[in-house]
Image (tube, rainbow, N blue to C red):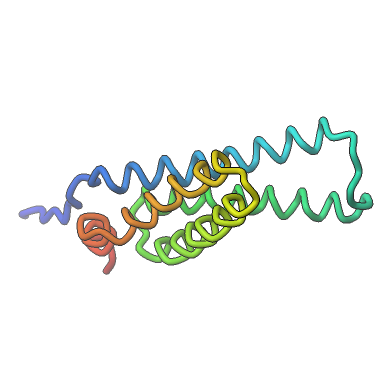
Length: 133
């Protein structure tokens, strides 16, 4: 009996880079949120607002990490939410530019813009679509 192999081609470099970007963004959000929540003395919000904002940030970071893993595993359905979140980060970066925080704006813009471009290029799209039934 002959065994047919529907082996998937190897991951293109663009998928690896998108995975690393999403993972690092998510890890940075989670880490930054935890550090801020544990070491912040100034209370701008009340306790409920602080908890809600912390949970929102932690969930955002977790979603980025999970989307990175889903793209790494070849899920074409993870591409659209990843693109939306990266587009939001690009938009957010311009508020930093407008506020005079050039380096912070670049920290948001460069990885998000890179991930957006890499999610649209042909090798990434073809590789993600190759795993779909």
